[in-house]
Image (tube, rainbow, N blue to C red; front, side, top):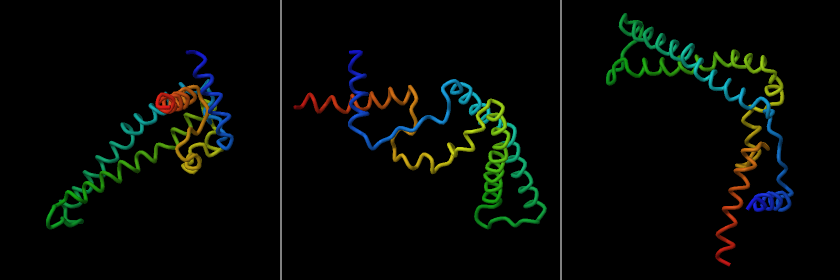
Length: 157
């Protein structure tokens, strides 16, 4: 059984010469730290920037409507303007925390991730639903998918 995944992996590389695997932009020694920083950034940006800015902008909008500087909607009242202010405040709060997260990655020594364009959406769009990097998890997943895809064809013939 141990030789089956190795044979499948050997077959996948020889049968697809056009698919050139691209190295993972995150070095293996930094993967755990990378996921830890991403979690921290998500939590801190929510609690420290997005939520307070959202609530503050909603309260300010409601106060402007109450004092008469902004008018209410005839059908829905102040709800549309207050909701829009909350959504915009949340988005601005999340975006404003990006520089702080970038500094955290730079402290870890991953400043080259931003220079190479690894987080650019166009970087991943060119792969058209194939595994964009070579890491152990992706190798196992790709091998498992190809082995499962090959099993029904071998049984039916």
